Length: 118
Image (cartoon, rainbow, N blue to C red):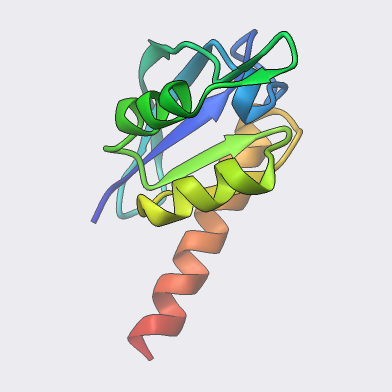
């Protein structure tokens, strides 16, 4: 089973965006053997801007990422994390190089899959 992971990054190198402020997510596909491939960049309207929170914008970002099982961000608020979880999307806070963050998520996914199958 492959996974899609959305990474909040402004530069394509580092996980450096807060979920609610991110204008784009870099989408990677993870294969069964743990290899990952860049798929696309998805532009979004941030649900939080100028100190305001838009519930409809949050819902739209979640719809935009609905084919992803994981988002990786530098920060995320409790409400956004809950809303993602309700949509079946798990949030990881890993402010690091994208390469490092993806490997951490993959290790976690592989470990949880092994735990479930035992």
